[in-house]
Image 1 (tube, rainbow, N blue to C red):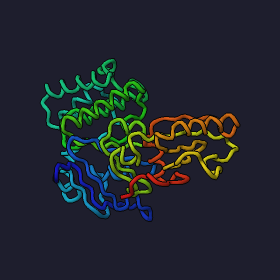
Image 2: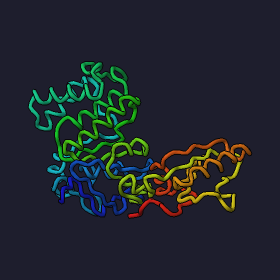
Image 3: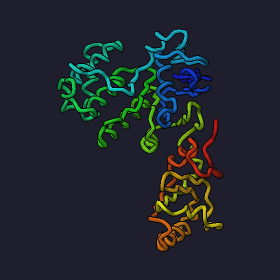
Image 4: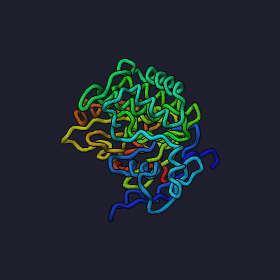
Length: 325
């Protein structure tokens, strides 16, 4: 296993004529957070459903902590904790009771489950609602329910934790707390598979990323590798007028070397070397002064343009593109 708590090889799953997962391969090692990125419908949740034994693959293999999840799903399931994309059924329970029950089901003693539930409530800042009962349509907000479901997955130590869009409905302050807890879980020795479509937030916590598009892995690697850029590369974001052409394409001789160009709506994301920053700002300022663009911003290169390029949104993907696998 070489430290891998999840190994997926050539995984294929179909729904009729639709191939939801097409030969997917990925690994999660103990102590690392692997982000699974992709747009809605890319095949992320289908993959998760097979990892936890809710769906049977049509091809390929899955091993969880050394157990064959296809041949022996019950054993594999004991090694993984899941926060599903849907809300957990909490009506009639308090967060305290729900988290403690999850711990007890994982083999924790009553005292340990109680202590771990309290610690997570403090860590996630949901103590105000810890003893409040969820009722149909009320009692607890969607964000508190989501954080409770996260705590239910995180309360007991297991080799693999799978989080499917864990920050849905969670406010900004508690999202930061949740991400810190995700990082802590990995630092404590768990492997974490983080399923999300939020590129910016994923970059803050993950060790590596796998990008899905139409059921296939289209890019994989560390955030810096996927950016396909040096540590000092920059991104020039140009805001276009709705009725204007893209000046970075219409000008025959741009004053800077562009290593990646991605069009997203009325935004152009241009990756360039830090040494060209002064020329880039002068060029963009001139474009804005002549009303060819609405505005611009220059910042360090991020994953967003690499992700858009990998999933086929890029208008041009030149040197420095994300690695295909």
